[in-house]
Every structure is written in C-alpha cells, then in structure tokens.
Length: 399
Image 1 (tube, rainbow, N blue to C red):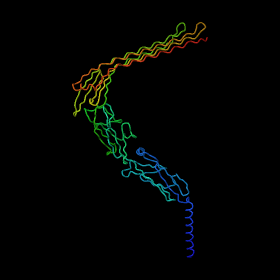
Image 2 (cartoon, rainbow, N blue to C red):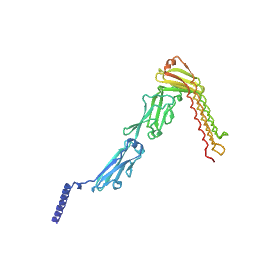
Image 3 (tube, rainbow, N blue to C red):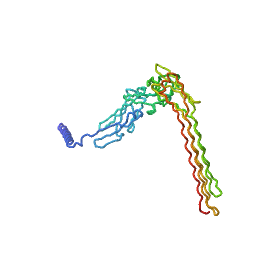
Image 4 (tube, rainbow, N blue to C red):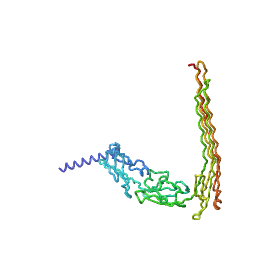
C-alpha cells in the first residue's frame, strides 16, 4: 500500500517537472490572462454636463483570444449602474467626499481583474468677479462674470455670452434688489436715484449655499452718443407701364418716375449740461431735446465723453420709369410697329441740412467742452430711380 502511494507521489512530481520545463522552453505557454479597463477620453466639461460616461474593455485569455464582450465578465459597480460599456450615475445623489464612481471587472476562470474610479465634478462654490477695465453706461451689459468652482478644483468662467449648458437657468440674479433676466443688462436711468455703485446678487434656486454678492462701481466712463435727425423725404412714385399704341402701330412710351422728396432740415437741438459732485468725483448730467425726442446721460468728464449729432433727413429715392408698350405686328396694310421707350427714372431727393445745436452749461461744465463733440451733418441724397424697359418691336412676319 505504501509503495503505491509513494509511486503516485513520484509520478505527480515528474509531471510537474515536465510542465515546468515545457514552460521554460516555450514562453507562449506562460499565463497570459489579463483584463484592461480604460476610460474613454472625456473632458471635464463633458463630465460636468452629463450623467454617464463610457469605459472600454480589452481582455486576453490563456488561449490568446482577445475579448471585448462585457457579457463574459463579472461586473461590480459603486455609486453607479452599468450597461453595455456605459456607466450611469445620479449626480443629485452624490455628496462630497463620496462623489466617486467605480467599476471592477473580473474573470472567475483566470482569477484576474481590473478596476477604474472617476471623480464626478460637483459644483461647490460660485464667485462674482468684476471685469477689469470695464465701462458701464445706459443699456450696457453688466460688467461681471461668475466663476463656477468644482470639487475637483477646476473653475469655469461663466459670462453673458457663455450660457455653459443653460447654467443661468438655475440661478436668480438681482441688481439693486430687482431680478433681471439673461442676458444680464440694465439701464442706468432705471435706477431710483444716482449711484456710483450697484449691488449684484447671484443665488442658486434650489441649493441655498451656492450664492455670492458683489458691489460693482459705475464709472460713467463710456462714450455716450445722442443722435437727432430730420424727417426723411418720401420716395417718388413709379411711372405707369404703357399699353397703348399710336396709329402707326408704334407703342407709347412708359411714364416717367417721380422725383424723390427732399429730406427735411434737422430741427434745433437744445443741450443742457449740469455738473455735480458725489464723493469728490465730478459728473455731468446731459439732457438734449428736440421736439418730442429727449436723450439723457450722466458721464464722468475725466473719463468719458459725449457726442451729439444733429443730421438732416435723407432724400427720398426717385421712382422707377414705366415700361413702354409693345409695337404691333406687321399686317397686310401696315408695317410692324416699334416698341415704346421706357420711362425715365425720377431723380433722388436732396438730403436735408443738418440742424443747429444750442448749448447751455454751468460754469464748471463749460470747462469740459473739449470732452463734448457737436456734429452738424447733412442727410444723404436719395438714389435715382431706374429707367423703364423699352417695349418690344412688332414682328415683320405676316399673319
């Protein structure tokens, strides 16, 4: 009995020795099972906006067969779900510091595995940032951006032109306590009283801690422009087309287009300049009016400037000439008639003269006339109308 057991042990050792020698002689018989799981290339922006991402599998088994089929492996996930190479996660359920998702892929036959983990960027803070060298005047965009700061340390700048996947839709923005809509702009004249600063508040609608506020100065340093203009002249009427023929079968000419009306001269503009001090800074309030049109602004004469233009109205365009009538075809008794000439186009009207600008200023404001430009320009002349087409000549072929 002992001899048979001993013989069995010797046989087993001999087989193991032979297997080891074969492996040394032929490296291809070495264990080759390996699993590789890689994250498909995905930018931070894509991870911030989506609720899923792709992973790629590559597995080499002992027999050298390469497998890309997820069904052949055991999948374990954390903080997410998995289907056909895509990891899905619920961003709202992830909380810092537990904002990681992971996947582990293993093969029970080869006892090999691989795993990958990804931090999902969560918004942790917003900061209002004032733009440098910004000017602000009536109807200008508010000169600020919001820095969105994420759990990964990444910060993205959100501005009036970059919605960043509708970022602003989740936020309420108030200027001087009044809600405003995207794009964020407002008119200084809408403020209840003169201010050299204004407050901006930004807050997430459902996450209260995501908020920030800032005080932004109004420099009144822009280039303000008032534009007044006389009435434009009316366009001339087009000439009528002709359908009549003379007794000699020639077509009548088309009617000439009417001349365009001249533009009106610019009406007189009255400009009032009044200076005042706020926190030792000089400002000028400008009010210009002509008839029912009134324009106002406030500017810092050390930094800003004002241009007032009083233009004449543009001349009206000339009417187009009418088409001439066609000539009659040749008959047994009469020769073919010639087509009538097209009517001439009307002349364009002259542009009106620029209007006068009368200025009233206090003693301090008058020292800054160099920052105020007054332009008196004539209106543009109207274009001449096109001539009408000539009528077609009659045919020489007998009927």
